[in-house]
Length: 86
Image 1: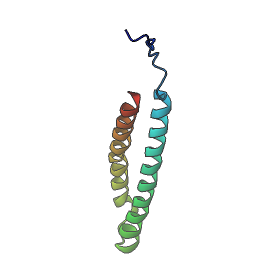
Image 2: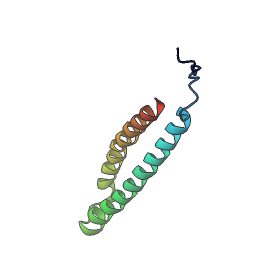
Image 3: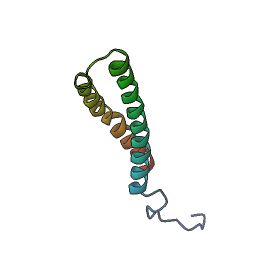
């Protein structure tokens, strides 16, 4: 009863969830792609170049590594999106 008008929260004071999710996903995917590329070049150099393993013997490890890298892409994207959605 102080005479001040109550403000109505229309929910439009935070960042757009779509933009936050898109930026977080893009940034984390870009960083993961860079890490994946560096890792593949290193494994190719060591396994195929130095140790003389056949490419067909090393390829499954590259596929498995790519599948595992989806976890550090999805989890931080969800966490960043949930943090800025409030």
